[in-house]
Length: 320
Image (cartoon, rainbow, N blue to C red; front, side):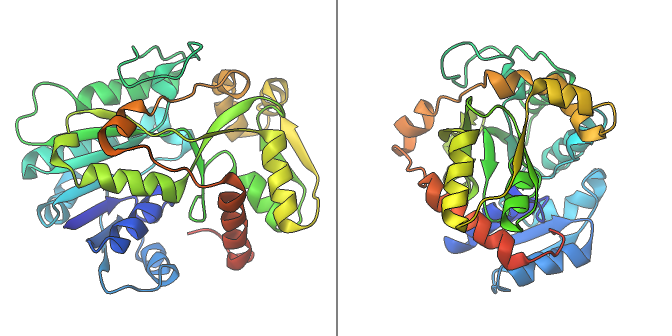
């Protein structure tokens, strides 16, 4: 199968690429900077089944050629946290236009913002969307576009994931914490020390995404991928045990995030999402388990250790 990955230099894009290659598929990474694409190819070991293409995901005409050569497209391109409200809608519009014109299957990788606040039980795919933030509303509007009845040729699915981490991860909440700890620096943990939030190891997510993407019957639906519940305290303990040393980590709860948001653009944008840090939404993965079998989640001690090792192996280089 020929697979096109949009946002191929990002964390989830790289993880999916590695899993598709592992299973014998041909992979094309699409990005806007050749230098970054080349760096990912080198980091992946320059396998023969991996190639790259430079294109602007915001221009559907630029996507037509790569789409036509692909059997399935993974939409992992990310406008960045600060760009969700303004930049995500035109990105999704562009991908949908190209997919409709070329009659392609597209897997959209998404998060949990559309579900709103924790209803008290794990959230299944048919849970009514109740976004309570600007970002959640924008993401829900995009989901409605993806499954709009007017499409005649494209086939789409949405895969929803909780917070994630992994060797290729770059922009997840946990990344700044792990990077600081790996380099013996003072760090921040976004969230409460005691609240248990759901985390998914990216290689585990990629394995399930590949399973879904290669099954034609999985399209036209939303799929939730569930992870493991971990408190901030537990994460730091596992990391310190793996590293063999302690570093200072400051927990940023809602009050700290709101206060520091006056001077930090990222934390200011995060302020409306702090409800997820103290009373997090948990995804119900029953649908996937019933369809494909119960998936195994990597032991967090192993997953966090692999992630820390990857960060240290990269040294102080900037992530791709």
